[in-house]
Image (cartoon, rainbow, N blue to C red; front, side, top):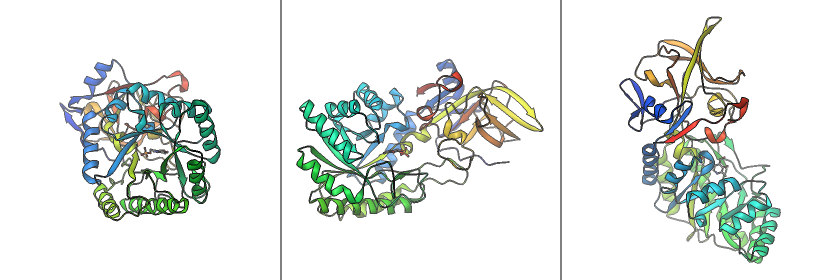
Length: 408
Ligand SMILES: Cc1ncc(COP(=O)(O)O)c(C=O)c1O
């Protein structure tokens, strides 16, 4: 038997079934007309934002990194709650444009920005978080050609990392950002070139559950930003402090203590150095805002036994839920929170493997899990599906196509 991850708060049973947004899972499947289906709860997203705002200093602004989930209705909903949006490609820029969001409140990070992406961003007034000196030169040239003053921030590759994070994106050699020691020179170059200097972006990692690690990282980010600004002899109009707030996916994971993070930040904000005194201060979050608000629903299409093990074969799989299958940034596969949605209040009574419909041994949704007895036709729920589900899975694999999505 292998344990399952913790089911996020806010889900309950109605008539024995998992309810999302106050209605049973089968109701949403009926509305969508098919499975597999992602259902995202507006109520849970709104509650998450409210709790975060309550815990964080008033001065801190919260950006949404749309890579986590760019489903148009969800993007629109989150846009109304967030102070800004972070994008990572020209494609995401078009999604944000289509949502009607104020593009002056959008920043664009990510290595390997193409000419046309830089051009589209500059023309739209989006802030580019520069990933290299050469990217800066391209931006100057494009700005000049367009007759538009580019809005440029520098993404810093700092000499520290976010401890315990699932994905480290700072510290040592990295394709992200400009090494800290070269940042002051680049800042001076931006100012000399006549571009609008929009400050620094320091993103060191994601999926951290330790408040201590986040507090330590944020303190280092503030110190690093101050040091670089002083060396460049500028004050910072803006500092994007990164994010990294994680959510509990696996057995034994506990939620991040945001109250502790907020208190420590409040303390630091009460005594900021001159370089940061008037800066707009941001964090950028993806999964923390939307991850636990989403459920992936897939239907059991076969139930079989092989050498004594029971398999529940579903019509979904890793083509929509790469992360839950254990193939997106995890070293050892562990079970996500999974339940039989159509028997949500029943006790676990048998050990089963829940698999997808792809012909690969990688396509696993739960291994040796204790679940209520389920039959063909029952619905399986995979939780923590609101981030890096549909947006980060190979839906074209084996011709399966994307899942349906719904914001409720
Ligand atoms: C620059 C940047 N910002 C934000 C995020 C969002 O991270 P998360 O969804 O863990 O909050 C990422 C994730 O890789 C990132 O690279």
